[in-house]
Length: 39
Image (cartoon, rainbow, N blue to C red):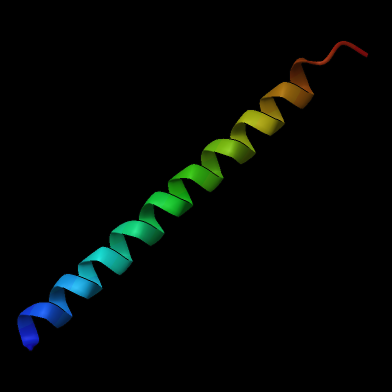
């Protein structure tokens, strides 16, 4: 029971971590593409 709980917790944390990484990557890419646009 405890083992499955810790496994679920680790999966939850790692999935959120990956989501945050992806989100920050997309935000950085968007900002860079906006800055790179010639106006």
